[in-house]
Length: 511
Image (cartoon, rainbow, N blue to C red; front, side, top):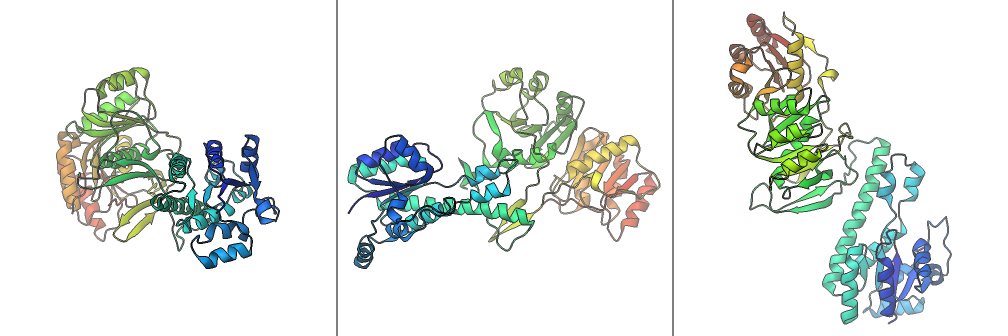
């Protein structure tokens, strides 16, 4: 049987060497378009696809390989007498090797000024069709879409004249993942253009960033995947400057930290443990901000993750270096800071871009047998219809404390209570089954610092007991959603103690 290989690639990495090796092994090389020109210019003998199909490229190259002379050669069973008879009748030659990668649709739509027409023209039709045909017929056809597989394929062809069925099946599976991901990006792009938020079918694609040593616990397997064209403001897009690789729990905690720190425009520092903030501080400098985050809970920060929204300078690094931390995340580190922090062998230093903190990316959470999808909670105090419901209005300092608390509480597991001053958290109550329980935890942590502080709740007070415990701890201002049938009881209790209380009308549950 004559040996034929069809090559058509947009990514030319390694393709010249691959084609020359196939040529030396006796393969006739079929090609078209830019790949044909590139290979011919570099001394590879090429049979043009239109010589095989006896039909020219038409419609500005939209139709080249969509022809029975090509797909018959890809799909025929080599050991089926009926298939072989039909090939002979129609003068079709089988194709044993296919090397194809697709038009750069992803690269095209990632351009900020991409035109719709350009995006459409970069939707490959012939390429996926050839890949799918070859992958379906992998019992007989070797199909390659990734340059990293060239060496293995050539090695087996040189050794035995053919690839193993195990290799062909593995490559076929890779092809179907590749075409599925390609189509998923197209589907997402077109759906976004229509403005449809929840289509009847949701197809998502992710690329493996790294295999992880284990998941939440050592007996669980895990890997970390990155969403193509996702926000640069993400742990998936972070650059690691130092330290051992991230673990599953590191990634979860680091993500929680950056989601909180992006709430602030002034210099801010956030410390996280087990996906909840243990300290948040703001200041005139990043060093000042971190000192307040540390003072918020100097016990819980031990072994935690810290995110900062300004460059880590020498002054800040000196303090950070004196604390046991798992990860420090910042937009950048000064040379002096890197020198100090890299002296600690195991600490991870990450940089991320803060340019896309406002980019809305749908949140997804897996459940048994399904997936929950929702828009991100970007609602802030400036968006709320805030109403003062007590006799006394908050003072300017209390408003600042409430604003900070409200920015943080939506990132705390419900039921959530945050006690804060105008520039730092001083108590966090997270994940309790009743709201007064969360309040007691937060207020106990705040201690004497609660006197004159603000208290933020992620949802309404079903009873006035939270106001009662807050007042006894010295809280002077409260922000909550309102909306309980017993709101008046809480309002009356706040007025009784001279507490200023405001309603936002919006809750911030986080499960």
